Image (tube, rainbow over all chains, first blue to last red; front, side):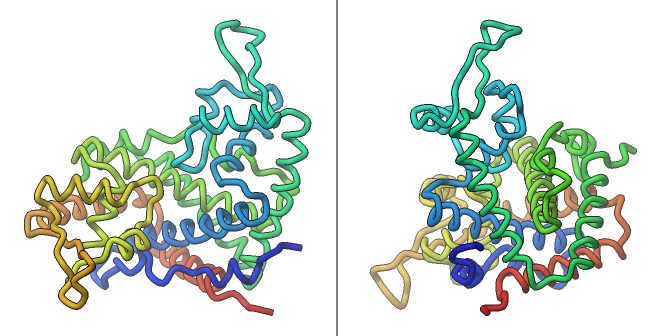
Length: 170
Length: 170
């Protein structure tokens, strides 16, 4: 079960991007500000939980998550590109994780000028513990919403993502 | 009309948080990763546009947006709290904007130990030009989606926001 669940739910910021919304704002702008404020809020809860339960940061968790999906590790450039959160220094985080024995840097088999980073077995174990809790935090945070509404949201967000990433080029 | 619209639409990252999604992931986690990856993508487009059209950054734009909504300016602490994007140094950004004559720091009328920051008339003019373009970028980015689908999304995101910020406390 998630720890600090109620504390997290109570941590709503009093004012956010949505306070910028005016009646005359275009629907698309309202949609964007709502997306942004909701994402920032959830991100804030996840940051707090990672800090209080694992004394770690979101960029560290994000970096380990990217490595966990890459069987053969990732080049530093790939790692930077895949990070989902801004504000983290990929080289600095990698150095820290390496010192703790959670990742290793290895020479690439195909190109000996390039280093690849990958999780160690201990890094994998630690990431999986965090990921399991992360999943529970998110489930708890969203649990007031029906499955049907969540599925609708996943569908509509997927549709919007299509438009945004492969929009018409007229 | 927005500039660089097509360039922005083509700038989709090849891999993002959604590559982490596995079949066995809970619906709420899929929803969260989709929200996160979509928001990050749009944020990236807005960053690029602000840079190429106004040679400015998203934290600067965000800070000016917060001030634009505050008739009597904001204390530094309020400003930090309201910022929507991470990675910006509020004091540093304020110093830069002050040097350019876009904001001023003034002693608070009610408490002479406190400074308030507000936009100058020139800061307001500059912000409004950027905000008008920002609106056009977002409209262009979302324009493949029907109004009805956008309205549904705004509604469902609002519902989720309610659950997330005022969740049950059982």
